[in-house]
Amino acid sequence: MSKQKFNYKEAIEKIEGIVEKIENGEPNVDELSGMVKEALSLLKKCKAKLKKTETDINTTLDELE
Image (cartoon, rainbow, N blue to C red; front, side, top):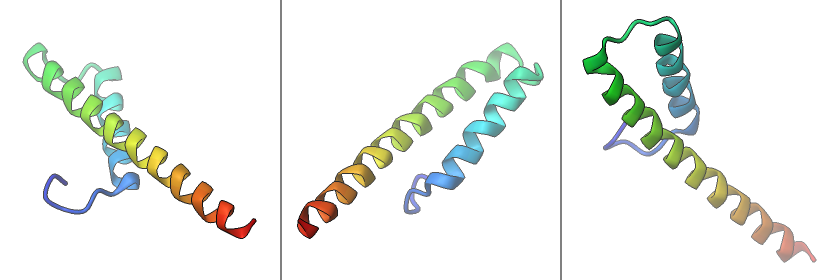
């Protein structure tokens, strides 16, 4: 996903998969840190995407007034 265009839905699905694995106790201690870091990175990208989308929508709505 790093070189492709960011896809919000795919990122959320990936985060959900990571959370499920952690909740099920699947990762060992060595894997856990990497999984948490990956989830955090995806969450930051999702948050930025949501903020950008909100700004775009507000700009569009302002143009209607």
